Image: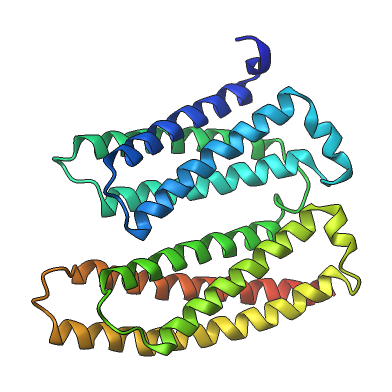
Length: 287
């Protein structure tokens, strides 16, 4: 190979782009995948095209050297983004296979196969980068925790959206809406904290200290997530069982799908609550 594809890592990134693009093209060509899980899968494939493409171009043109003043560690950023792509495309492959693929759907099977191949390539790429042991926020435990919190929040919001989409005619309880708002707000705050750690210029804007801000946020996030879990469990399952009992024969309902989404939100929220508590303990120890 010549040009920018002299290294093994560059070849892996090119393959990641190709197979993610193939999965995306087949999915978009079907035209009827409009459920939130389908939108999530399409978003993941787009993300898994853009990230390796940007990293490939930046390194080929040596632009990553110019970003040294803004980014603490380029190798850490590459490793963190590759790990994030790996986890995201694993979730997309699993959800796409479970929700959409059937034995008679040849096109969707090919889409899943291409997504699984891209998943394998991302796994190899992330392992190779992790073996280099880059030092930085995204490669450390705190960065991994933050990334996991943001990723799980995306899964929670997708499952909640799919639940509401499966029962469009049913009124949405205020408790469930409040839970979704909590998940969304915590997701935004988590992303902001990650950006503050990555970008030196933004970090300078925080006059009262990033560690203090993280400590306060972790306390609020843990309390809000605890409240959200309680509200979702109380109102969500009551909502589900009430409408399943009274509208069991409704022709447009997939009650198993709705129940799976309900459980996905519950489990994801509990897991994220645990992560925020762990993050809180680490914030206290870091003080």
